[in-house]
Amino acid sequence: MTWGSAENFFAMGGYGLYVWGSYAVTALLMVGEPLLAAHRRRRALREAAEALPNEDNAS
Amino acid sequence: MPLTLYTFSSPPKFYALSGVLVPLCWALAVVLSAIGLWMGFFVAPTDATQGEVYRIIFIHVPAAWMSMLLYLVMAFWAAIGWAFKARLASMVARAVAPTGAMFTFLALWTGALWGKPTWGAWWVWDARLTSELILLFLYLGYIALVEAIDDPRRADQAGALLAVVGAVNVPIIYFSVKWWNTLHQGASVSIAAAPKMASTMLTAMLLMTFAFWAYAFAVVFTRTRAIVLERERGAAWVNQLAARESAS
Image 1: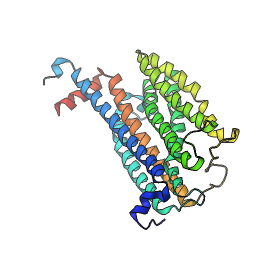
Image 2: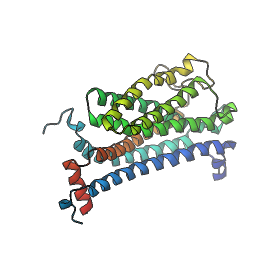
Image 3: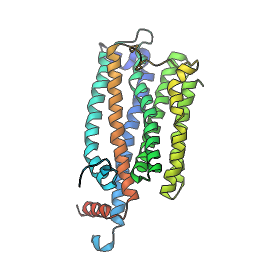
Image 4: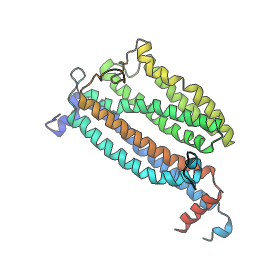
């Protein structure tokens, strides 16, 4: 498939809104979800550290 | 200690192994989706009847497949966790639900954006679309139910019951295009027949499916690790891990 120009590529034969609207939301969610999951794991680890008995938690 | 089937049902062992697997899954997801998108946009030809809008297929079909597959995975681990009192299995089930709901939403969203130019409607109440919407509600209902019950093991059991009963919806979605007259087209790819699409289109779609698969493993493992840390707080191995983390 050759598009000829970037303009043609982004126009998607007149269906740009539908094609890029699909890909943009997919990209947004598939970047956002892993960030949320990673954040949740770090928070769980931090909370576990805060809940440590005092003798282990010198800082 | 010998390696057995049960080795990785132990939360600390799972936590360590999944920590190694997550970066590998990410690498696989990135590489596969890069090749898949390149094939989908630069190798696969324009569709003869639909024009360029068909290129939504490279995320629509993989997302829809994942939405159904992940529901079965969630119901399976929920049932194992319930029947064998396996805590880790229940945690995996909980970790799958948000990812499954996300893919269900994406299948509906990309479907709406594909339906508008091809059918003239964002949404129709046909069997395929309606059963997929019910799938989204099942995921959301499962999440709401397990979060609403304070005792984690009772929440796991209630969630398992909902997940297993709801699993009947998955074959309904899959066969809906056969059983009823739907606006949604029939399967483009099936095990029984030759695929009804150009081979480069099919390759791009399968690459994206494997990419989404790797993504699902990566994110579900990450979320399971978070849930394990939350639920095992106070256990000696979590304390050790947390002490090492706060020291560094």
